[in-house]
Image 1 (cartoon, rainbow, N blue to C red):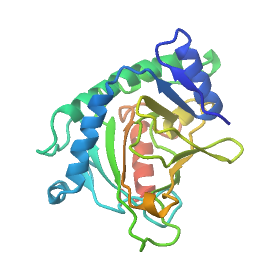
Image 2 (tube, helix red, strand yellow):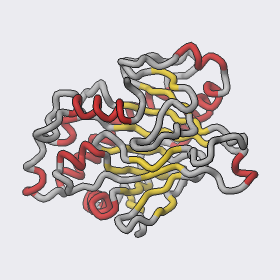
Image 3 (tube, rainbow, N blue to C red):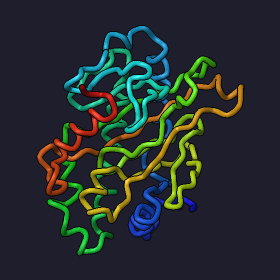
Length: 280
């Protein structure tokens, strides 16, 4: 499988993007409108934050899920080992570190804006017999949603005493509708194809990677595949001393949005947070 790179500015972008999602669960967008200098500046600020002691002042709230999650807080569903990462949850209403400028909020808003367009692309190119399952237009599901989450992830350098079998992010599927992933600072992200083979995803700074989550899989009655992906550990000793940062935006519907006969977005999110160890 080859993950197509879709030119955001092309006339055929919407159809090519949706086709890639349907056939692979993933798509990569080039020539997107978000300025890379903004992305770079945000990464630099958060690298300093994760290196500081102030992060302990923002420890996550178990119910609200905002704030700082220390190293090895989360495990993938079905895995006993905790992922080798720490992260911070940015919500529009949540706590915001004093040392972080408004650039992160600017990036959050720009990613949310492009996400509405991408969901419209999906809706326009979804067959009528599938889109009739949607309880409302996809872009309306996330409209002013307080659940839309920008997660700033830091994968520290490996120090050689990690448990055997522990990885930066074990194979998993995302919970939400779609995820928009700003290119990571280092390689490591891989996606699994329908034949079970893993493929590297480019960390080209001029691209966005988009994958399908469980909620779109559920809302489309399986038409769109929820994408299994992982972040592997560096393979060489020199790379093990290199940190990695990434910034996925998870597009979550409002809690009352109906996904299926079994779940609203709120009930499914609650279920999955318990499965990955972020709620008791």
